[in-house]
Length: 210
Image (spheres, rainbow, N blue to C red):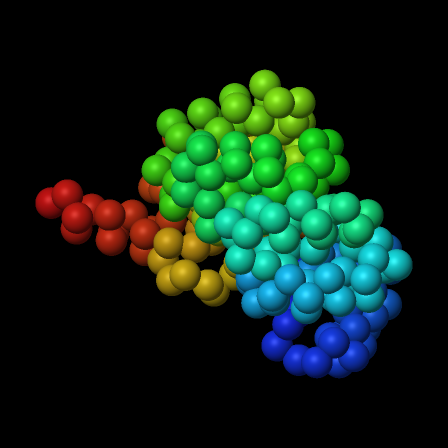
């Protein structure tokens, strides 16, 4: 599946872009859109109404990441999945999202970024909190397109991991020998997160400890 941005153009133009992408991927479940928290409440509701018939994989971060009231309203009127979480930084943040933001277990998508949320320990605590509230691991899609997110996705059997080729410098991407085939990536044989398999990142990290 792929994801494209929305919100940088008027709605009619954005819809033309989305419809052009749908002609390539064929099914709405293969396409997500991301607004990067660009909209206010009224704009988000307008986009939601226009996007709903397309049945996209998810509508990501339509409003401010901690505007749980707006998310709850969107979830009440937008039937396809919503997604957010990359700008939530603690277990309590995500707990508030699912408690007050209307997010629907087994349907919506939570996209916490592991390196931004203090690594494996906090991510594991967040996962345990969500599972205790009826969430499936397949509803979690780590954000960031990095080696840590990939390792967690494979190790914890999560829904999937985003990939951002050429974004975030040496901290993005996967091991140098990684090959994505038909949308899938075989788990690396590198130990742990596999940072050693990213030559440029490993060199940067070595400088920090030498």
